[in-house]
Image (cartoon, rainbow, N blue to C red; front, side):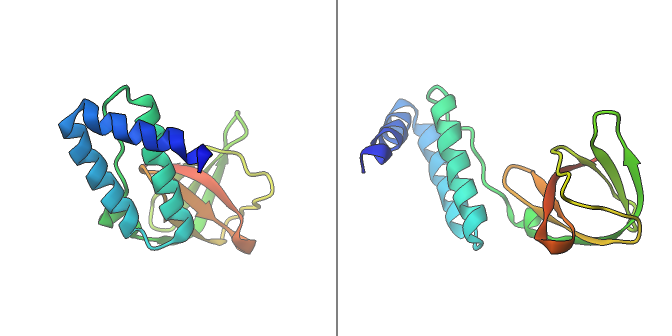
Length: 140
């Protein structure tokens, strides 16, 4: 309980500081509560608390909306290697995704079927075989 006290105080004082922020906080928490996947819901709540701690009295957090719940399944048609070590993956639907985190254990190859799952705050993860994943950002 002691470790939760600072978070509770931040939420409390943020609500007192700005009534509009209280409304945004309520909406963000309601959206987080609607997330069905446990890990995604926890990540949503963590992001709201993180935004509260850095917002200086202004809640800026937003949770994912209904549109971001769509999974993207596709087959890799091309892989480009960036000088920084990341990859750009082109899917059969024409979408291009740039790897934002490096996951050397995730092996990708042309012809491989992958799934892209949305996360919180417009983040995405590309899943390959064996449930391994890397963070990606859409280019096209």
